[in-house]
Length: 248
Image 1 (cartoon, one colour):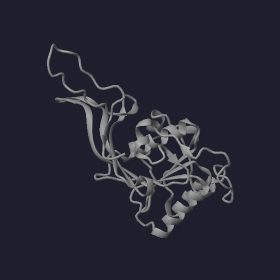
Image 2 (cartoon, rainbow, N blue to C red):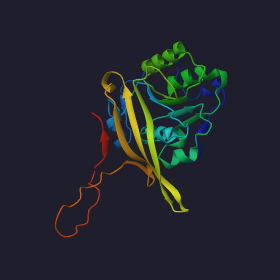
Image 3 (cartoon, rainbow, N blue to C red):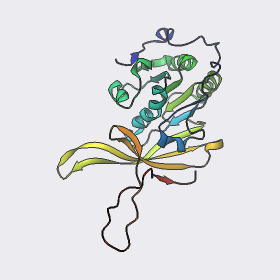
Image 4 (spheres, one colour):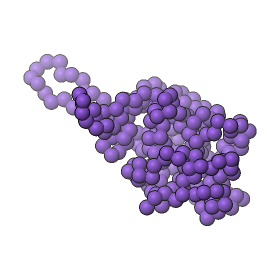
């Protein structure tokens, strides 16, 4: 089943609760993320009401979309509704591969001049709203959307340049694996993701991980130390090991 395509703000009516409705009582305040991403987020997940930006690197095809997919997967699998606005290249097939439930995914590929209205309407009724950031968005409009997300208990995920996010994630380095001399297929990518923010997220962090890795996003294992003396002994990755750079 493909993600639900939404065209025009009027079509959002069936997806959202009334704008006056509060954050549902008893709802979980932190939505889950993949285990390897928990160390980058101050609450070890997506806290309702927060703004978690995904910065677009240079060049634009820098792993940002894969990072967005990784952020949504666990929350969607746990039952949350997600929406993606203004990203026409966002693929439902890729979303399904990482575990995003397509029957709880709303896609608005071309919001046009109604972008603020569309995002605000989705904030009122969807758990996580990913939105490409238009070049023309003003600071007051961005502030109002972030304030609305705080009030409604939605996680706002701007994809692009966004000032004032609680946390900003970015893929800062990436190396593909799978190609040999003149042959092979790209299988997975080793990326380094940085996190910076304010408050509890003020201390910068980095983590290196596979994105994706063997069908799943997972942390890159550390290499075990070499055996100094004695006969040859098989050496492999340390179980559960991962590379973290910076304080955490």
